[in-house]
Image (cartoon, rainbow, N blue to C red; front, side):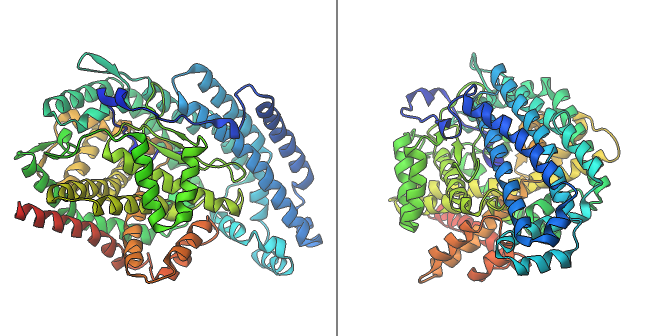
Amino acid sequence: MKTDARFAVAEADDDTIKLEGLPEWNLADLYPSMDSHEFKQDVTLCKSEAETFEEKFSGKLLDVLNGNPRDFAMAIAEYEQIEERMGKVMSYAGLVYSSDTSNPENAKFYGDAQEQMTNAGSHLLFFTLEINRIEDAKLNEAMKKDASLQYYEPWLSDLRKDKPYQLDDNIEQLLHEKSVTGRGAWNRLFDETMSGLRFNIGGEEYPVATALNFLQNSDRAKRKEAAQEVSKVLNENIRTFSLITNTLSKDKEISDRWRGFEDIADSRHLANRVEREVVDALVDAVRESFPNLSHRYYNMKAKWLGLEVMEHWDRNAPLPKADERLIEWSEARSTILDAYSGFAPEMAEIAQQFFDKGWIDAPVRAGKSPGAFAHPTVPSVHPYILMNYLGKPRDVMTLAHELGHGVHQVLAGGQGALMAQTPLTLAETASVFGEMLTFRSLLSRCETVAERKAMLAQKVEDMLNTVVRQIAFYMFERKVHEARKQGELTSEDIGDLWISIQGESLGPVFNFSDDYRPYWSYIPHFIHSPFYVYAYAFGDCLVNSLYAVYENAETGFQEKYFDLLKAGGTKHHSELLKPFGLDASDPDFWKKGLSMISGLIDELEELEAQS
């Protein structure tokens, strides 16, 4: 359950109180309550079933396979069922916790569940390790003999890719059990520290999500006040955030070294089922595009704002004459559902369930996790979406993004607990595609040049946040993790790396003052999911190319698109993109995706010349 890095900042201000009808999710489809019999029963079952499974199969898998491949397939199915129950327990505990991370009862509930599921999972750890000790030829021959085992071929194939990096069973057991007091504990410390911060702006106290909103205020003085207050509070806690970052970076280096990963991001690439060369080609293409994309756009924006030099608190400032009205929830809902329906009625029907059945938590609350995410839970239930909805146009696009994830997760659920999860190479496809559909729908409604210009500029900024900014984050992470190999980093060291990347990626029109140095510390992906962020750029560039295919396709695109989403984690990105004539291993693929952003900036320049 990860907050989308692009939406790690929720926007809010005093107008929030005008919004009405914001839904709060109903988690009863998972469990009735934290102290319910059903939840306690499942926790107990997870432990007992895992222990029984270990007694039944540990050290015996090769014999089972030799005896009857169908029995081996039934063992995988039994493993999958236990994994799904454990996933359901942790999904519920995580969603309760994210509703209010400042509540001690929620924190204890989540911590206890995490510890109990870790203990139960320790009895399952042998299973995948033991499977990977079976010879490839023997496993392949067994799959040919039994269709039920062949069904799990995609999962088994993915599992084999982990084989070179497996450690001795006892070491794997130790790392698994210590995760609660290791990485998991540091993650929780970050979350609870961040949710407990308060920022005094205009004499009022705000949590981080609300405080960061003021960086989009039309009043430059208010943006500056908020930016400096955010800097002050982050700096007051920077030693804690630096310690967390140093510890987790070292923890990852130790794990990578023991497992034999060559590059600091290789473990992420393996999890994403994407080749390092493909990611490197993406990063190189985006980095080369900085002058043509972000530098060019922000030079234009500085002129719109009447500034020769932009400060960091000007980056997300609204454009002059931009529509700053609050968009009510009902309007956001109809806008997105109409856009989805225009592409495919089935897509809108799935998305509508999130609104109608209590699958979305939208209001901003003290202690609530900032930003936005779509959590798939488990295939036997359904996804849930967390939002911090504040009625801004960007919030509508965020909602369209998360609903895209939700639709994807619903469609992929048919693959079951072991194969529903989509690798990050394609996990952002449906979300970014949902944004694009919504954007194109809104753009078609623009009646004036000013409206079109504002809409295009907002989309360009979103795309720069998705592509340029996320690749800059990835570059920053690489610098931090590489530097950490030489010893512990001070907050000043990390701040230096942060500022250097900001200057390169955003351009010379910006002056990055010292008060921007601690801003790296509030971004949760650096803590929870190292190197995750490039997936956003991957998804955006992929969708740009995919959307171009859609615009030029006469028939059949929607069916191919739904097949892609339904595949979940059963196919490699090359196989899924082939029906569309796309190949992510081709360096020109990324340049084509980036050209769409460049084209929108070209149009903005043309509109600017006309005005």
